[in-house]
Image 1 (tube, rainbow, N blue to C red):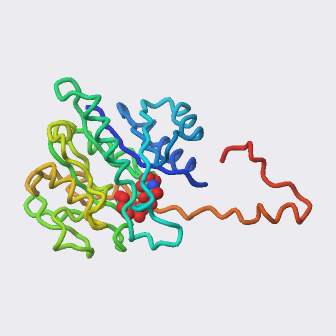
Image 2: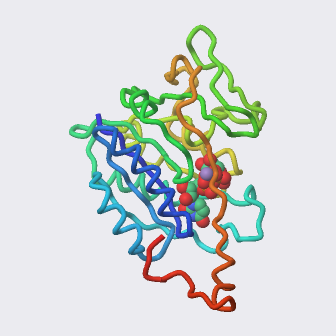
Image 3: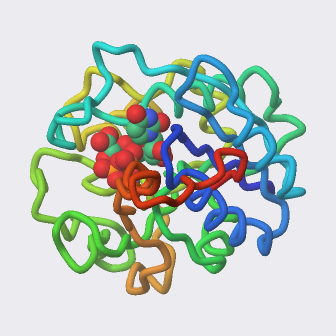
Length: 255
Ligand code: UGA
Ligand code: MN
């Protein structure tokens, strides 16, 4: 089975570094199809060139977040959801281009700032319905994880909306069988859903129940993915270079 990885991404100074970290891991995993969805009106030269340079099987798509739902620089980061429309664009591409009779695989939503181990992909590859595992450094805890009783998921190790969310886990904590995505052609993420309810909303629209969940990563005792967040790059010394008699960094050098 192929692993279809859907990654929303947007232009900022750290973008190429983020994508490089992901690609380095993906290159060491067989049979990956990386669907990268830029939050932009036009495909950026940086992402276009980068994807080509990886040698990976990639699809480059676009989906722009409209201004009324886009997070502004001053906004607290919990105000509006991110990556939602981009993930839906990835789902639409799968439905338009794949057929459940010929294509077998699993779909994983991989944000560009997280840290992924190669083992994570070995764990998710043979997912029958939905597989789940712990995520490190998320929810203001050391990790969040499914809680198992007799080998089945019965609860969630999290503080955040634990009782309110049917699937109280992060985007990085689950993968879905491709057939489920193709057969439930209306299932998608909901841009109006409250933050933290994206994962639950999608899985409910796919008709998934708790008993469908397949625990991975040594029965959910191992952390194989981390919800890292990259500090924004600060380049304020660029402006001070000329005043000190130095040249600014060459704009032709891609960072
Ligand atoms: C948390 C969750 O881990 C995400 O899955 C969830 O989408 C997000 O909250 C949310 O607020 O909805 P967090 O680290 O806070 O993640 O969010 P980001 O990593 O900044 O953004 C998630 C994805 O959307 C990233 O791949 C990012 O590149 C992309 N993004 C972000 C855009 O495409 N456009 C933006 O304007 C911002
Ligand atoms: Mn993130």
